Length: 162
Image (tube, rainbow, N blue to C red; front, side, top):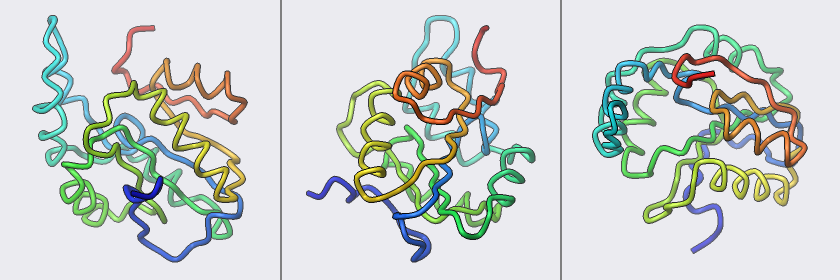
């Protein structure tokens, strides 16, 4: 299996150019209705991700993705498991979300979101991507981005306590 088998290319945009990376949940997709699956000591990740079909669009995140210069590649890098691939692809298409590549967590991957995203970003860079911005809402992921030297653009989703 290739390191990029779980990457879904929507366009033929090259990876070896300026690239803007977006998280999905909390940045483009409003997952606030799904937070109930993660409260009060519950961590029902299956229900959390299965419920993604009911997300609404966060207008600011969608507008930001749409506003990225056409000379840049847009990658959506999400820790959603690939079992919700079809629901995610359908949702992105139905909502007209601009992206060239979608990266989901491959089956059986149990790493933290930050570890998963660190490795995927490194693979993007190895493919020639010049990462000019990573738009993210998760504090642990933002800390990882800063530690790794990626240009992080923090978004306040409201899902995390300060």
